[in-house]
Length: 118
Image 1 (cartoon, rainbow, N blue to C red):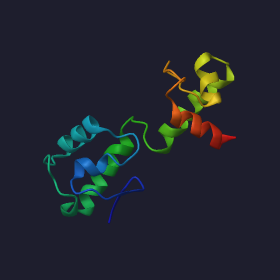
Image 2: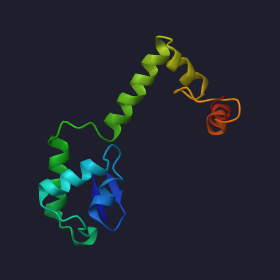
Image 3: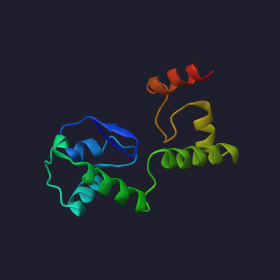
Image 4: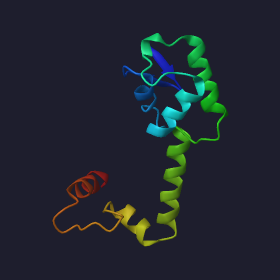
């Protein structure tokens, strides 16, 4: 069992497994593995405790916002938009599509989620 930043990693390769951490994407995982000297297809079962420690230290010392910090900032930005009553904020509050999509025939998911909120 491999845990990095309190996230259980289940995939076969290290690059794919790091994408399970909220806030880490394809290019960031690739750069991280390259900077630590891992190959592109490094197996997760071959990782040592020392490697896990180095990955944790690199992620914690970087200026990236990941995991709960990133979720908190996104939530605060949405709450700010709702608070100042912008059009985007109103759409967020109503549970409708925000980016100008049509709602006459589409947006089923948004409308169903809106029913669940109430």
